[in-house]
Length: 257
Image 1: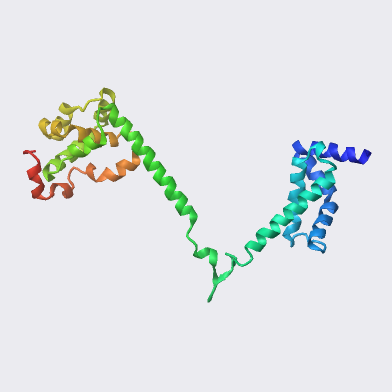
Image 2 (image 1 turned 120 degrees about the vertical axis):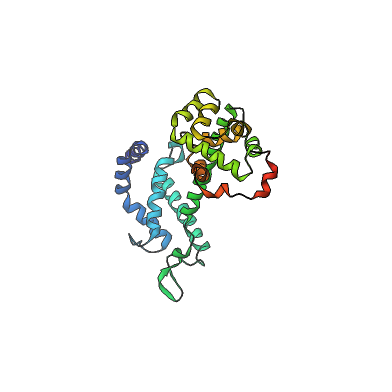
């Protein structure tokens, strides 16, 4: 009876004290080995038989799950060890027909099967990247709404004629050379048309016609929005040939920009 109380006291101490739990496991290592041997019908080889590690884990789980009303601790832990070993055996049997991923690929002794699998880290990174893009787009949309502009309006206001797009490029280039103009946009919530016209040489009426588009592009080049800015970066060159050489057929959609 005295020994039973001592075990229970040790178990309750081990529930919250990792050092006490380690000591209890070491103290009953012979018991754990004996319960494993009953299951294997032979003594377990430490370091070779995985069942012995499973049994040790089950003993620790018994410490955490034991309550005084569940009977003698050693009987309780013996059942826990056996149940855990049965689960382990069933799992191993289900996967017995599966080859190991660490086996060599047929006809290539230096390549393991696991090396032929797609790297799941790439999928995780791709998911992370998509999430970052989504968050930045959401934040950009909120910022646009502060200016009373929506994404559809930006698309509708996008210049379609090559020379008009080139003019917008010059406006952006001027704003990037004079960050105070971007600060004014953020501070006032209005496009500084007069100052941009003077700095870029682009007519006011062109900027007024494409104000929503210009606000969106200039906002993308304020602090943050690195991903969006990367997609728009080709617009930052005032002397790039691409946009200025746009198809003349689209000019019919503009009214003399």
